[in-house]
Image 1 (cartoon, rainbow, N blue to C red):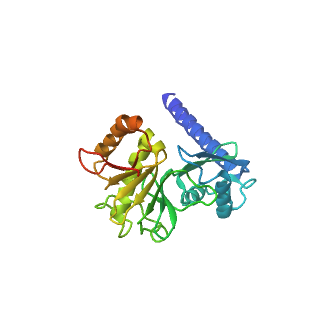
Image 2 (image 1 turned 120 degrees about the horizontal axis):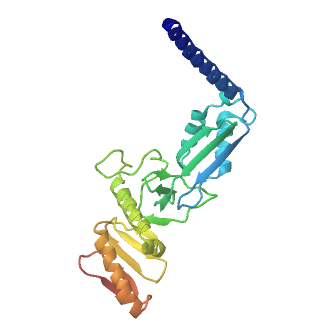
Image 3 (image 1 turned 180 degrees about the vertical axis):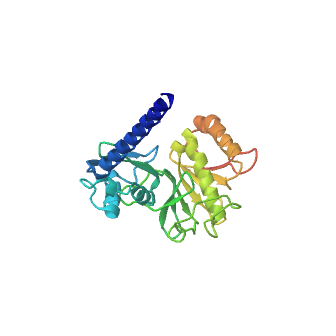
Length: 269
């Protein structure tokens, strides 16, 4: 009798497992042939202006997979959709997944440009917060810090590169040190609420030093190299607070903060 119950117990478990496998197989079969209802796209722009739209993402999907609505879910290559979206220059990352009720969800995070570079040939491109180079978008220009002047670097010649420190990883060609300093300066300005609102442009001189053009006042800030930024901008803030706020914002045409422990100014004539 004990042997009988043992066999019955084992048989019951076999039946239950087999039933579960059948149910899973049926569910998978049903999901495979379930028609796709629609695609939901959500965009995360962070703090950046829009460079890519939901319509652009929809166009990428259609171009790579054709019309998806009504197609069996098993025929839709989720990973291929994800790959095609992340290949777009403005996309930092994408996550694509399907639901049991026949919908596909696409979550896209856009790259956030922090600097627009206009080189000496008047070619324009962006640099994002991770140092990635981005092409310009003629339909959606990003309102970011602008760098111009003596910059020879070209996006078209280095579109697959990302700005790194001069001693690490991929570089961006012969102007890599200059690009890194511009990137470092742009990061610093963007992380400071006042500087982000006040500094409008960076001009690169022939000696590869930086001059900053503010939005308020008629002066130019002579920064020098992108070193000792904490000290240089601390001096600038002190001079703004205790100098220009008292004497007036249009009193000087040049404010030189590149020398240690001093601020040198020249007056308007």
